[in-house]
Image (cartoon, rainbow, N blue to C red; front, side, top):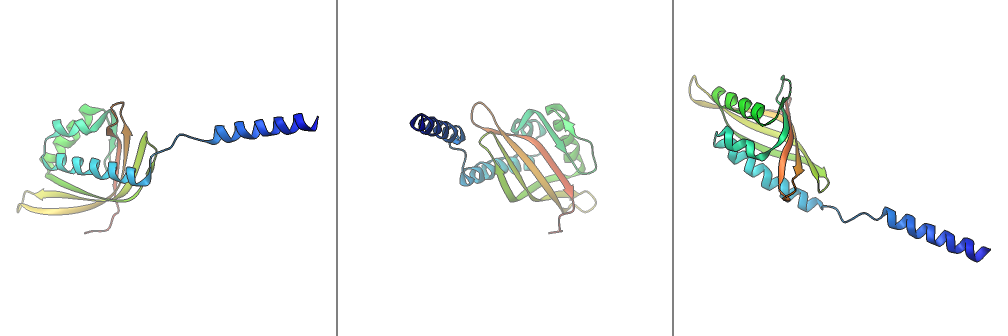
Length: 158
């Protein structure tokens, strides 16, 4: 009886141990590399002032949450928001990640960003700082797209 109980206990422990073994996830270095590459692409696209090309980095059902506004969901709404932002003077952005975490399927990045806006009055560039969260989702082709973009006022001035 004791041998069968011991065998059952060993099998149970083995099954429990196997169930707790997950496939190897994505490393912190890999997440940092993905975010760095994705942020660089996003910064270039924003700087190009081409809302049509910019939307290629967003998921089809993505949502952006600019400060003081309701969410803008879907490619068309995001495209329109950026077109309006360009008309207002948006000319660039720089992301400064503070925290990057997640899984292979979804990477969450947060930090501060500095947004450049051309002031039409004197053609001078105003720098505005914001806190932000970008949520990057993995597509079936193993590339990452922006699923959620949230930013708000409150970051210190540069």
